[in-house]
Amino acid sequence: MTSQHNKTSVAAISIFASGGMAAAKFAVGIAIGSLALISEALHSSIDLVATIITWAVVRVSDKPADDEHHYGHGKLESISALGVTALLYVLAGGILVEAYSRLREGTPPPTISAVPFVVLVIDIVVNLWRARALHRAARETRSQALAADALHFASDVMGSFAVIVGLILAALGFWWGDSAAAAAVAVMIALLGLRMAGSTVQTLVDRAPEGAQEKATAAIRGVPGVIDVERLRVRMVGATTFIDTIAKVPRTYPIDRVEDIKRNAQVAVGKAFGDADLTFTAVPVARNNETVRDRIMVIARNSGLAIHHVTVHDLGAKLIVGIDLEVDGEMPLVAAHDVANTLERNIKEEFGEDVEVDVHIEPLDPELPFGVDASPDRVQTIAAALADYAHGGDIHDIHNVRVRNTDAGEIVNFHCRAAPSMSVIKVHQQVDAIERGLRRAFPSVKRVISHAEPPRG
Image (cartoon, rainbow, N blue to C red; front, side, top):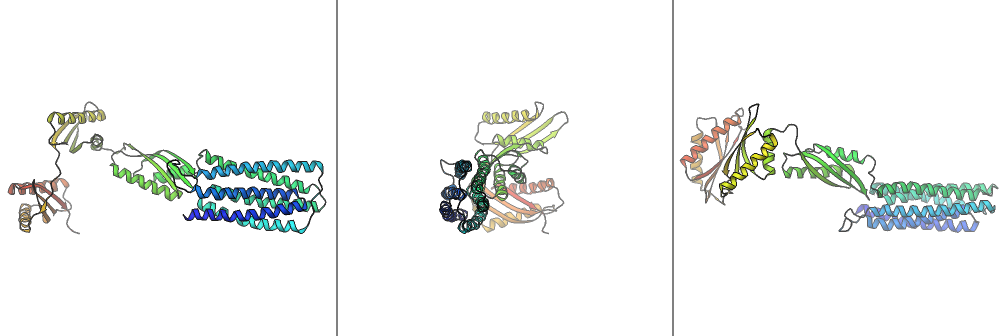
């Protein structure tokens, strides 16, 4: 909202300045018969038309995207700048024709007085102020229309200097000075139009801003999780930089982590470009450090299967893979067997027909029913039993014991501590022994969930 207000207010101020100075120069030019001054007045009139167009366009160009303009309305600024360029060429051509006619016919020089010089000096001061204000606003808002307007006013300064030189030549007795100055103004207008047309056409044909591709690529490659940028395209629509990229991410990453990468990439290009809109397409690829287990997990995930306890034995000549496959407990055996066979085929396609795959089918644990906390006495009894089973072993400090009653039976959760140097295998074996002992002593216990942690520091 602030940038929009800044653009419209600067453009509105320029309208009044352009109108006043154009009228003053035109009136004085007619009065003294100076083609150069009249040409400069017409130039300012074109600037006035351009400023009015700019003022109208910037009120629309910042509107958000809608159902018909998916990339917003920013290109209207480029179209308006192209239209003003056409007006400049028409004006330059008309001035050159008139200047040539006067030079050929030997038209008398204008009447010289202090008035045109005063008007031109004021015009130079006003145009320098307007050009500076517009250039600053264009840089802050990245507005092509305001940048074109600033260029107009900067060219007006050069045009005014050319008119002053022409009037001085005429005052010194060189009758052709005024017409020559008018021709110089026309050439300046034509060069200005050429410069404007070049940048505007480049925007309309979606030419990437210089250095933008490298800048965007570096920003996205710096996002953790991005392996590489496969393709990246950049284009400008108004002040917004639209970036379309295909980036490589590890295929072992879950979907939610890939979504985090996308969000982080948007933040990265936003910091690099300010107003940026990123379309991020993630391509999962295999990394060089993927293990056989990683690749098998990817195969299962792509098939929507739940597996665990994946074991891999490399015998040199071939691989032997063991997998626990979880399926719906109510699924018929023939259907479950088909699922296991499909998984085996997919693994063989990945590693070759020589791989030996054994799939153990087991029922997928159902979601446990809603339960309520057991009584404090029951929790104390279970906690005491856990402590007894842990006594004498490397597992100690049984704490945070919770017991919940469900329709399926009791669910027990507990935390325990072990020596920090113990291996995970040894910890798991001893905790399993505690859990088995508890379930033997308390048949009502349906499931035991433990969490082992190192001693407090």
